[in-house]
Amino acid sequence: MENRAQKYHRERIEEALREEIVALVEGELGDPRIGLVSLSELHLGPGGKTARAFIVAAGSDEEARQSIAGLNAARAYIRHELTRRLGLRQAPEIFFELDRSEQYGGRIEELLHRIEKRRKGS
Image (cartoon, rainbow, N blue to C red; front, top):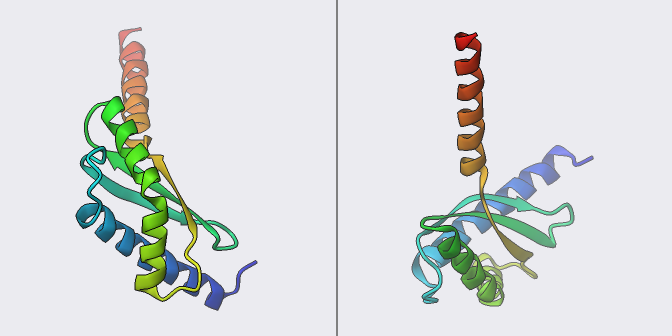
């Protein structure tokens, strides 16, 4: 179990990583595959050696896949820049994943609405 100081340090690192990744993705990556994307969540792994970045991409599913492919192609550059900008000895390995929580939430809402409609109909 993490003590309070370790938890606070971990949260500060996560926030710094999030800010720098957003800055890099929004302004410095020139890959044409990367469309309009935003970082929704960042989870630092237990040892701090890995991080999962959840990306919300605008456009079709194919455009979203292309954006994730572009981000994954730029992982080494992003990691190098994080090390340099944050003064870290070693930046975590970053894994970009498509965040589908909004789509899942919309589907759940639709299903709940249908159930409610059936209850009122019977």
